[in-house]
Image (cartoon, rainbow, N blue to C red; front, side):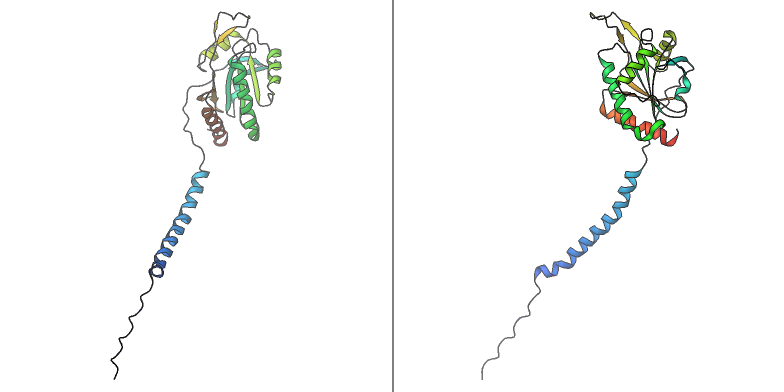
Length: 224
């Protein structure tokens, strides 16, 4: 009689088939995590820009003229945020550059219309008549409904620029070509609709100009 044959050993399940449940569990957990994170990301992306702007003082009363020869006073800042720059029409250095940047700000905020306005103040008001400023404004395609150019009494403008606007109107010796050399600030100022100065922005810093536009939009949206 033949010897009993040994029974075959049971076949074990292969390794990969035993790891599938764990892999599925991991993928499931990742899916749950993604579903949980997406709403948070959307909320953060939609969160309003809140710059927590400082109060740097207030625009005082003044009586000057705009580039149309019309009287203009501090009420030009009332009811909307305003971006302010300084220039003079005979300037051949920084002014053309800063005015081009103001023109770009005008373009980048066209969608909000009169909710954000611009004002450029001449630091050479004895020469910069309304007519000269009007010609200068046309050169940079200034929208008269949104962008005003201010001139007028020298002493009033000097007090305004050197005082609350924290800039300069120091006239140094004229250049060899006869162009006046007037030292003035190359930064922009943000004024809110209640005539309070809320920030200064270096016009040479592209990131600060982006901040300026966001801050102006924030003030327009919130009325702060």
